[in-house]
Length: 591
Image (cartoon, rainbow, N blue to C red; front, side, top):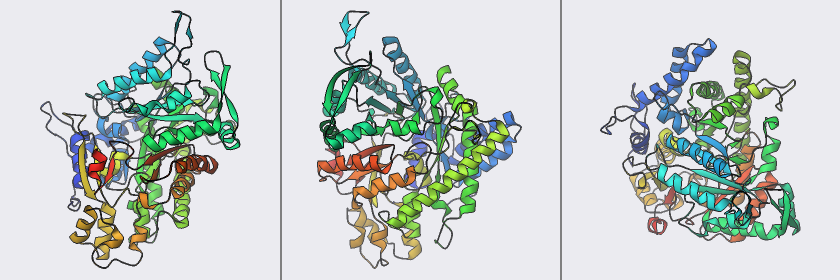
């Protein structure tokens, strides 16, 4: 892949992959589907639309639009995809993350499906807790029949998502959570044994400390009918955890969400308990809440000598980003009155970061090292503290979030504008636009193929984008050791340590990839960030194709012990379609 197009006074410097993503998904089109917007014009459109909130609070919309535009134009901060797609347009639905309740009645089930359809159409993703639904074969008094259970209704939601995504802004995504005590839990865990079903769902089992301890003690636990809260049987916790691990090894699902840990950090317990998260697990939300996310590319704040971060510039970026995300809440057009009420009550935002692996590359720190964990902790703590300060300043200027009274901050605590401030998202396509590594993940490979549903005329078709990691190219060129021979070697599946030419001492150790990292380092990294994040952390615990099944179980237990709020594992090649495929195994990935 050629190097990124140089920046001009009018347009940001973008890679070819970034331009493809922008043109196929984000930039405005006319009725003939011709692109009528440049990337710079998109950023200006977004900045001006979001800045309109300033006038509500006595601010200067034009001045703030300039600050936000400059940050996005330099690819230092990007909001979530719906904001880039929809801000300043008629739709103007700007949030990415939603959780909808699923009540134990046909009207409740299909009301949530209707709301999900509108959310997917605008580019958002939805999370659901199906734990309130009565189990299969349970009594339905109104019809004197029997219930079909949560999994059957998940299949209905999945089919609807398939239909909706054909005309939506991007592919719909769902999270399904089922409490481990639900009588249908084993059917839920096995749901992806039928591979043609539930392709639009991530699955997570909701567990708590008591279940995890029972699994370690080889004890039973109770299954409880949610209709009447009566115990209907007992199950071996150890056997179920083993089943969950085996299914996750096979399919990448289910993951785990530690619901009691999430609710210990729930800032507004008076409003209810958190039952589910958004599709990637980083945003726990109350029923009907939505949240807007944004991420800062921390690799773009490395000092010129490559020794450290420019903490002052990073602090300024955090201030602008927090204000931007709070403004989004005011200018957003919500899919339903229920979502508007819940979101405006807590005003949750999720500022995160991307480019962390690139930052480590620039600083010469291997991802799987104590130095990397220390860097993660320092960085996450800095972002959290500065985001807290920015939100508290907004609270003084604009008022605390309406549900502050009765929250964990009342009385006498900070009067934050936003009930939560920080989240670590996977970043996905916005990291392609920024030209950086995704979220806090290590790079999947130094040469790889990205697979995305980007074709507006055929949303079901995969677009393949093959590239060499831009940070490797950039640092190699700066160090004088990059060549097309190295690129060709990597593109054919070769390892950096075997590349032609003379590499600097330790280069192969620094440029470590996801599958060269032992799984415990993945869990430790997630935990290092989670200690300084309000919401949760999206992080995939990668395993090589030949990993033993028991390693997945060990990772589940370690994530619980380390204080994570959830865990998602992925064994390479365990799905027929995967977003990343290492060059050299394309045929296996396509099989």
